[in-house]
Amino acid sequence: MSYRDKQYETCLVSVENNIGTIQLNRPKAFNAVNIKLLDESYEIISGFNDDPEVRAIIMRGNENAFAAGADLKAVNNFNAFEARNFLDKVHRTLFALEDNHKPTVAAVNGLALGGGLEMVLAADIRVLADNATLGLPEINIGIFPGAGGTQRFPRSASICVAKQYIFTGDFFDAETAYRIGLANMVVPAAEVVETATKIARKLTKKPPLALREAKACVNNSMNLDIKAGCRAEQIAWSMLFSSEDQKEGMAAFLENRKADFKGR
Image (cartoon, rainbow, N blue to C red; front, side):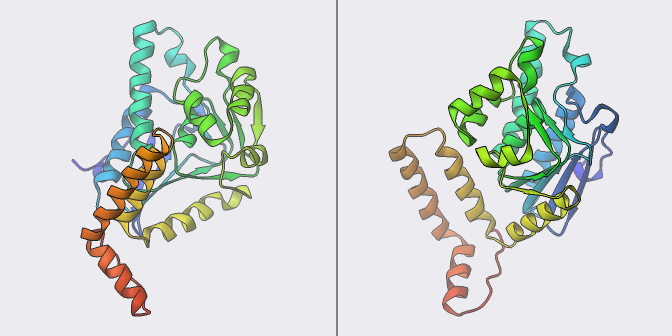
């Protein structure tokens, strides 16, 4: 059964105008992350990856919360092995987002705390509401961010700023997130989804194969030395010359017309 045909308990899913939207949907729990939400969101995000109709992805919560972190009622009594198994599912889901062949846009209203913020950090482009509250407060309950926060935060901001917020657990607002490099833009709360949709719509018009390879190369820049990264970029760039989209894009430019990209 396709992900499009299923009814999920913790997520809402739609595909419209080549945009796949996943909405975390545990409103009474402020979209707190439990195993069910991880399994369902992983299935949907993976479905988007493999769906040729989807060319861009929006991930969002509701007006009160993107996600307020792990569901502590669900994880409180874990032993060490259960905690590790839980994080296996967390990382599987976040890497499905980060490594997705399609560009991803996080639309963030309200709370993005703990694992919720770590999920935002796995998205390519991040649109924040001006009333959003962010933070990694795990230190206050005897742990620390375990869903990639210690790795992705300093890659977007700086290592000293990452340490400040990870060590103190302090919350911060959307303007601070923008200033330190965690967000692309801050907009009025009522305009978050609309703004994310405009960005996603623009991305659907770009050549899918080139987007996929560009995203992979930028992600590689965080993990490879510059020579290895440039070699990977060289190979990906050269491979695109075997695509129809490259022929169409360059021909359209030379003929002064709009390109029609097919993703092949």
